[in-house]
Image (cartoon, rainbow, N blue to C red; front, side):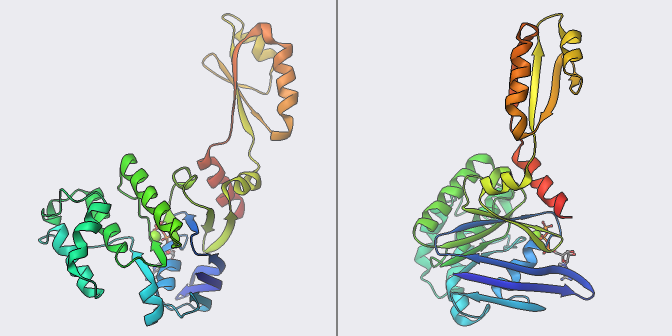
Length: 294
Ligand SMILES: Nc1ncnc2c1ncn2[C@@H]1O[C@H](COP(=O)(O)OP(=O)(O)OP(=O)(O)O)[C@@H](O)[C@H]1O
Ligand SMILES: [Mg+2]
């Protein structure tokens, strides 16, 4: 549905996007992650045809970005979407429907889908941040796009609303919509996207499933040991590499050293009340991949 090859964007002398390749098949959900200024919004605006690339190529179902055919296939939720504060949610969505040549009667169904049915007759000026974000989502749902480009769609949404949002994406993807969404949180997109691409300073530094990213980051586990009462000093002496925080001893353990550490723990079990092996957090993985690329 979306093919991006060797995409480059320069703003004056500054390079915002550097030879990026990315493809999304129908029904695929891809998360685009990266630090502030990594190039996520720039990439999305080029997919929409709002910005011209400095180099490389983009096609949307074979069409040029911004062409009539591509626009008819694509929905977009911009990063900073502005609405008219004096309009009600319903009036605003009816307006968007008219712009897209759709019947205004579709507004209520769209507002219901994003959980705004009850607030539909309130002015947008009285909406909370999350409610305004939902108006943006309702707007992106107009016309069942084949490609949805969502720039930080979950920003401002509470955890329950996020879950509802991802359920909406599941439905769309199950019906063949290709989805490209940006986010700042790997921990948020982990289970709800098929692939994760990471941009760092305009370059794509990772593209794969979460398990592939996990393997690429090759981060150690954290082992926590809780000594039996009064045994902290003795336990610390037998794990000299551990750091002691309060009573708890903490040490890093490479994936390949798990069984070695386990047998050391077993050999000192009279000193240990409890122990845990903690996997690296998703945010650790994300930071490690971005950092090692930089
Ligand atoms: N119109 C512009 N003129 C000049 N430089 C720009 C312009 N738009 C973006 N940039 C630069 O391009 C780079 C990428 O910006 P972009 O907005 O794509 O980042 P982003 O990944 O979306 O960041 P964020 O997470 O903060 O939204 C930044 O260094 C930014 O300063
Ligand atoms: Mg952005």
